[in-house]
Image (cartoon, rainbow, N blue to C red):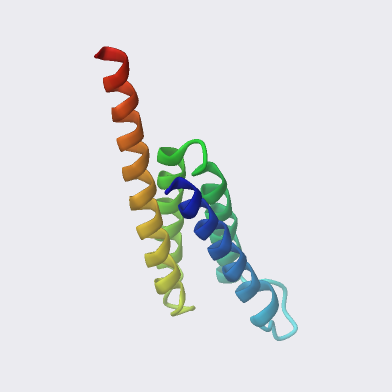
Length: 111
C-alpha cells in the first residue's frame, strides 16, 4: 500500500506542477505569491510521496502540511481545495499505514 500511496502522491505533484507552470497563464507578470504557494505545494507533495516509500509517517505529516497550504490558497484557485483534500486523504492513509507498520514491528520485538 505504501508503494501505491507514494506513486499517487508523485503523480498528484506532477499534475499540480503542470497546472501552475504550464496551464496557468501569467499576464506579463512573474509568478504571483499565490502561484508560488501552488508550486510549493507541488514540491511538498512530491517530497511526501517519495518519503512514503521508506518513512510513511513522515510522508503523512508532510502531506497534511501541504494540504493546509493548499486550503490557504483555495480562495484564488478553487481547484486547490480538491488537491488539498486529496493530499489530506493521502496523508491520513500514509500515517495510518506507517503507524500500523511501526506497531507490528514493536510487537514483534517484544513478543
